Length: 438
Image 1 (tube, one colour):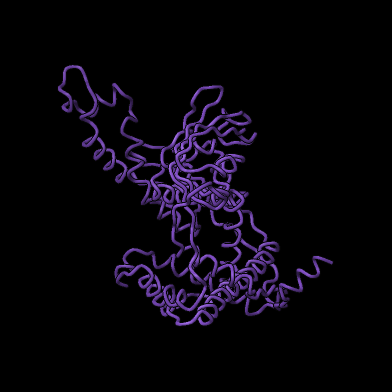
Image 2 (cartoon, one colour; image 1 turned 30 degrees about the vertical axis):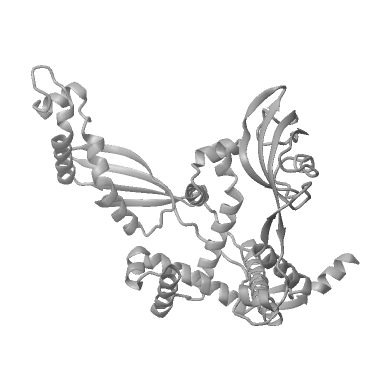
């Protein structure tokens, strides 16, 4: 590779020009001919036996040129980027200026690059911290959930009530015609849960096991299946069984059965402590987010669209992976939601824009303060990951990109720096509510 020039353009774009010498290009063309020449048919020759000169005469002198350039491009581009001292953040747009076996190849590449970032004040910022404290009501609500999880299901004799679990068969009809997705057998529906469209569950209340009856409802105007939106429907119901939950007593025995504690009071205190730890983390995170928001508000940078596009693609791929783990293809999910891929992808743009700006701002803070991740930091993070996923530390090191990990750790340390140098004014959540009421 022979570096020619690098010109910085507007909106964090750069234009590179470099060449590949004739000898390397000639060799690459010969290699492509050996691999691809057999695909071309030439009259008078068996397939794969025609000389290169005749193939080029029939199919064009550049028939092997672009494949040869593609073979040489990655290494040459990487070397040119290194010599130019730029950091690409998007896919390169390549133009072939000239290509011949006697003169070699000259290429011009346009690519989005890491923008220059100017940050305003990040040292000594002021932020308000709302401090939340666990209430007795929150502890009682958690105890209620514990009771629910440990409840016994008993068969109800008589009419179904709100909160009961109804085992039903149902089939829906619109204008007397059954519709797709409107039928199920032995479906366990918790009455009053709001799982089904308005009015459906209310009309099961009062019926007893063994009854068959109709439920008359109207689909909401904004229903996800457009063909059903706003239409009246009749569901044929067969009620097989009704069950209700019997909650265990809230006493020391429940505490012993559901926790490591011997008394209900000890169990309640552990719930309070755990909930307080979660609230403290949420309060600290809210402070960090508020501080970072102030930093990015004062940041100046021409951020290329390519950075947002890359982050959106990552978010779409992550979402696709998560729904596939649940046995659902992304294509089917989008069909159910009535969205196109373009609409779905665009929905991530606000998040992508915010995340890209945050990372750029924090990288700038880390650079300004010479914040770096030490080997001790890396080792501690490797150990944390290994412990979390029950893996060997050496295996984790094989799987992670240590350079990227160091960058992530430096960003975390940049957040800690901003926070440790901020003026944090604490305010009780109760006082905040009182002022709002006033």
